[in-house]
Length: 302
Ligand SMILES: Nc1ncnc2c1ncn2[C@@H]1O[C@H](COP(=O)(O)OP(=O)(O)O)[C@@H](O)[C@H]1O
Ligand SMILES: [Mg+2]
Image: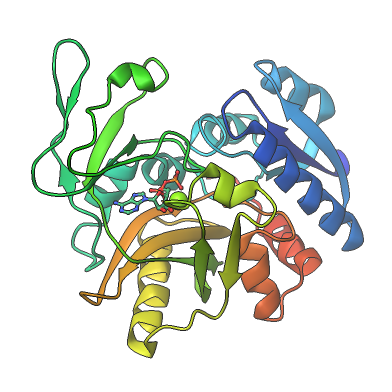
């Protein structure tokens, strides 16, 4: 396929719960790319995306998609097939990181500690039995933006699988009390540790995206040994899964026990100007236009 000179297609949207978040990421990265001297076009992801890309013939794709289809290896596979280089991770890293259970399995043996998986007992009528072992979290294995995350305390009424969208694959974890930390990784090197403080019960969708929903403290004011461990684990996860471009590892840190626990790796982290990764990059002396340009320069197929 002949390439359309130097055009970058910023892929955004789609049809999952994170479509609007993705459009915000795309617009911010598009503006930053233009500021850095790149030519781009915002392209909405529809079911006809293959035909759209064949017609547009971009030189590369900036993948600004989040969630199912955009973050899980599906769009990456299509771009490999069309031989259009793209930013961020390839098929395998995307597919593994999108599935929180597969991530734990893939990273077993690296020394990274994850939240313990609990057996999910579901009765015939769809009632989920809460184990007596303490507070638990039930969440989808493969969505993001905290969509569908529920914290259940001892004594809470049992939820039903019908409380989630049909077909949602659920998982259960022990609830990790404490603080919320996150580390961005750029081209294999960790940026810094941010502590996220929010007023809601946990870092839910509202805390993530509404104005004043949360505040970010970076570098996080935590024990230097924990700080370094978080940087090290985020880089190890990125490298072990062979992620490309940026990724972001989410953690819980339990002050009472001193335990650092990784929750997940995001291969398509939010990239608006006020998102966690651009904030950390700016703190490390990489402003948004340089950050986006470095991702575009590293665009490739698997
Ligand atoms: N095991 C857990 N213990 C405590 N809080 C959790 C746990 N799992 C998830 N959470 C809360 O829910 C948020 C979203 O969960 P996460 O696993 O990062 O999924 P995603 O961000 O992909 O929706 C976390 O940032 C955290 O606030
Ligand atoms: Mg998360």
